[in-house]
Image (tube, rainbow, N blue to C red; front, side):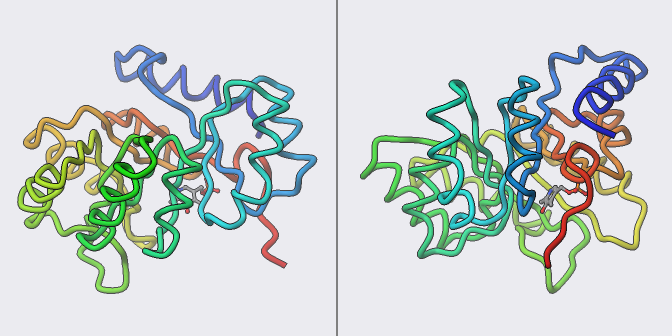
Length: 217
Ligand SMILES: *Cc1c(COP(=O)(O)O)cnc(C)c1O
C-alpha cells in the first residue's frame, strides 16, 4: 500500500495492456483522510487529488494549494445544485455531471466565473435506481443538451454496482465514450483499478489503497 506501490501497479497494468502509463492519470482520493496522511502524499510529490464533498474540500484545500503549487482538484462526489457555484470555483475537474438541472447551474457558473472545470458525465451503467448518473440510452441526448448549453464534456465516469464484476461496466463505459467521441474514461478504484486500466481507463480514482482505510467516525 502507499503511493509508490500504486504507481508501480499502474505502470505494470499499463504495460500489460500495451498502453503508455503516461496516458493514465492517478487521482488520489483524499476524502475524510486525516491531514497528516494527505500531507505525507503531498510531500511525496502527488498533486492530483479527488474529493467527494464540496464543503470538506473548501475547508482544507485552499491552504494546501498555497503551500504546494500545482495542485489539481477533482470533484468525484455528487454535486448538490446549491453547491455548483463553489464547485466551479474550487475544482479543476468535475466527474459527476449527472442531470440536466446541474448542467444548467454549471453552465451559468462557468459563464459568471470565467472558469471552466473539465467535465465528465456520470453514467449509471448498472441501471441502479438508487444511483446517480445518466442511463446509457439517454447519453447521446444528454450530451447534445449539454453542448446546447455551451458545455463541452470530455469524458465519462462510472461507479459499477458493488455486487457485480466491474469489467462489463468498464467495457460499456468505454463503448459509450467511443460512440460519443469522448477521449476520457474515469473508472477504477482501489479494488479494481488494474482491471479498469486493462479496459481503457484514463483516470483512476484511488483512495484507501494510497492513504489507508477511511474512518468516518
Ligand atoms: C471514495 C471514492 C473513491 C475511492 O475509493 P477507494 O475504494 O478508497 O479507492 C473513488 N471514486 C469515488 C466516486 C469515490 O466516492
